[in-house]
Structures are given as C-alpha cells and as structure tokens.
Length: 224
Image (cartoon, rainbow, N blue to C red):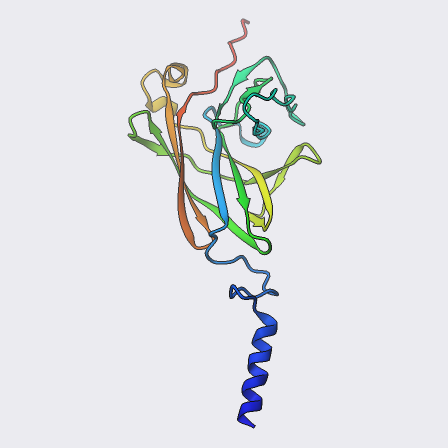
C-alpha cells in the first residue's frame, strides 16, 4: 500500500513539473530571470511635460553598413525640424522631429530568451550623474509603456516579458533639477551626463548604465 502511494505521488509530480523544476501550469513569473537581458537603449534629458508628454518612438537596431531604416513618425503631438538623441552603438540615432515639449525619458530593450513563461522587470532607481560619475540626483520613473509596431504607438505595459519575446519599452522620467546646475537648462547643452538604472528582474537586482548623454536642444524662442 505504501509503495503504491509513493508511486502515485511520483507520477503526480512528474505530470506537474518540467525537468528544470518549473511548474508548467504556473502563470507566475519565474523568480530568477537568468534568461532576461536588459539594455538601456537611449536616454532623453529634457523637461517635464506632464499629461501632454509625447514620447519618441524606439530606436531601431541597424546592421553595420546597411542603410538606416525610414524614420518613424510619432502617432501624436506637434513636430518641428530635427534633433539628435543619445543612443546605444548599433542603433539608428536619427529623429526627424523636435517635440514642442521634450519629455525626459529612457528607453529599454528587454529580451526574454526562455521558451515559455514570463518575467517581471521593474525599475527601482534611476540616478543622474555628471561625466565624472558624481551623483546629481534621482529621476523618478512613471507609467511604463511598450511600443507596438503593429499600431505604431505606445500602450501601457504591465512590466511582464513573455518567453521568446523582445520588447521596446519607455519610461517618462522627472526632469533633472536644471536650476541647481551652473547655467541651468541652456548651459547644460555643453555638458555630458550618465544615467544609472537599478532594476529588479524576477527577484534579482541588476544595474544598467549609459554615458556620454547630451541634453536635448531647446526650441529657439519665438519673437513676440
């Protein structure tokens, strides 16, 4: 009788668990997240636009020597002539517009190489540093959005990445305290900055960084 019970228990476990020890029917994210990679693709240091914020579309990876992809026009918001964006090597950095109010933001490229399941990716802290690594303060993230290439626009994101998927996501950030810097917002164009982002992937903490970030140009004042 005891042998039969043991065999039944082993059979039940064998039906619920894969060889990796992950429950095949468990919808919750795996706690470790070793298959998830996160890249800080681009950063826009600018202003705080509040409810009127319009976010840049994600930067598109390009192959060395290949022609850059056609620029993506934002789905909403006013546009005027070009501005540059800080981006990662291998990405197209051309943006054919300058927003009337440029929202401070960051773009992440998140890939889950696992075949199944999902992982939660949360932003814990975003720190702004000068080009020497001196901490200048924190930028508060809000309202994560994921880019939909089908719709050509952003949609709210639940911070889960399904297995076998790569997402382009963006977070609006509170603006740097320009008034606390010598020369304020206008003189910041002559400087470069760094961004350090602390993440929680599953239950593991990670840090991604980007340096040599330049500040988005202000639109020239209109004479009245």
